[in-house]
Image (cartoon, rainbow, N blue to C red):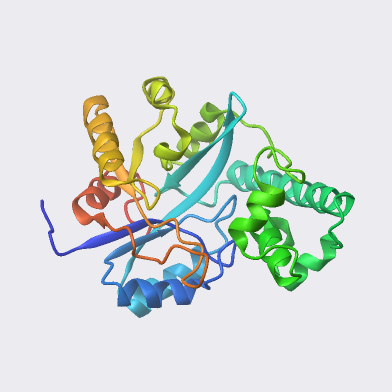
Length: 281
């Protein structure tokens, strides 16, 4: 069924991971942008779920549970988004806790490398940027570097210190793409390949589909219209779903605005109908 006037955004980050907007702010912006449905896809955490369920009723914007997991394939980071799963499985929570522990360890190593490169910062300084130190990541560190005038903006912080190949880069905990897909499938979710245009490994998509991948994020701010069309075509050819969203980390400077990329509701509806838990009520 076509809903030409309805839209969704299925890739959103909040202050529960490395976003700068609270859960309630996300719902406020979503309603203002005319979105009918959203997924909060924080890194390695589902801490936004209970609050989001309350906000769903308050703001009249449908909510589907999400998470973003990081895998590694041939030295490249591959991001897998899980949608519409049961977040309360014990094994699932234990795995997320492990990822958060590894994330904190990574942040400490990055801060040590920064100090070795003449940047006077300490791990504890990240409390200025986030209350959730278990989820401290490179974006938090970049914000701290800007705050301390060690970088002119977030992009500069990545280009100078934090991006792959730069002096303070530390690789994330290694799990395979299949591991990430399996973690999501074990709790009844759908696994989507995030921003495939950034990854540039289209040759692997058929294999990942064989390993359980359910869809591609064709709609993303880093995809131009040609790439968006290409990934919609690949998804249709492989018989997998189409997803997308703004990948917003905040509505301020240096961030993509929520709703800048909107997923037509018909694609969200197909995702929702295929999840075992529906819209997660």
